[in-house]
Image (cartoon, rainbow, N blue to C red; front, side, top):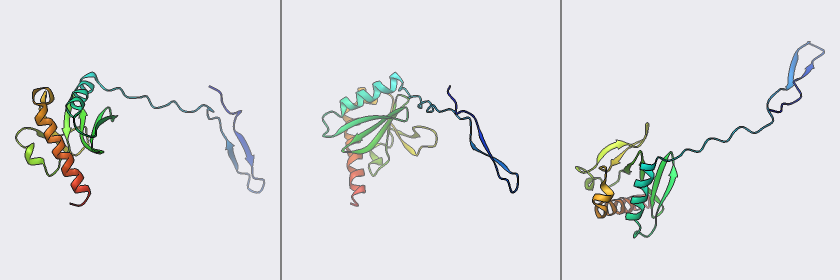
Length: 145
């Protein structure tokens, strides 16, 4: 690894203090942060969810945090982490009670609604309807309605 020529030392003649003006730090840029890969189960669930939402006007997913953020109409409505779907809390919570469970998508996250395993293949219409309802309530809340 190439280095700067070495430390340059200057002396203050009045008080005899020496200080370093340059040091032996590497000139190369630090290594880029290693990209995280998404596990196959999470990728499959995100793909299934996006397919189920494909008839929605503006559905998309974006890889983030080792999982996926799910967007509908430009709002984050859900996360897909560790092979599970976590739907944001909203005024549509009553539609998720008794079917989904409150859980955190990752340590330190706020509680969200964890859909049952296999929810998309088992009942895609229900999942789509709930996520669309959550998106609507979040959009209305952001507009102050």
